[in-house]
Length: 176
Image (cartoon, rainbow, N blue to C red):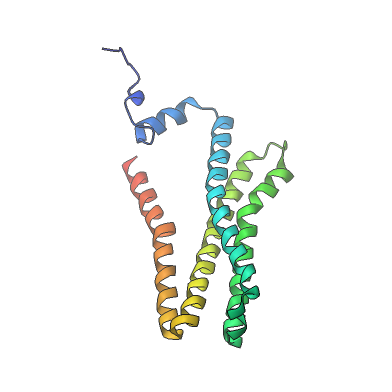
C-alpha cells in the first residue's frame, strides 16, 4: 500500500476526475495561463498546416501545367489562395493580439478572442482545403467528380473538426 489519499492521482491524465482536481487546485490566473498555452499549442498545429498549404498554392503558378488551366480554374485557384491566406491570418492573429494586450491584464479576453479566431480560421481552412480538392479533381477528372470530391472533403472536415467535438462537448456537459 502506498497510502494514496487523492483519488485524482489514480485517474489518467485526461480523466474527468483529474481535470476537476486540477481546476480546483489552480488559481484564476493559472487557469488563464493554461488556457492560453493550450490554445498556442493547438494553433501551432493548424498554423503549420495552413502555411504549407499556402506555400504550395503560391508555387503553383510557376509550374508548366498551370498555363493549361481554364479561366474558371484560374479564378477558382485565386479564390483558394485568398481563403488560404485568410486562414493563415486568422490562425496567426492571436499572436498579434497577445503582443497588443501584453501586460494589460487582459488574458481572459485574449483567450476568448483567440478561441473564436481559431474556430473561424479552421472553418476557412476547411473551405480552402475543399477548394484545393475541387481544383485538383476538376483539372484531372472533370467538374462533376470535382464537385463530389470537394463536397465529400468539406463534409468530412466539418464532421471531424466541428460535429464530433460538439458531440463530445455536449456529452461531457451532460455527465457533469
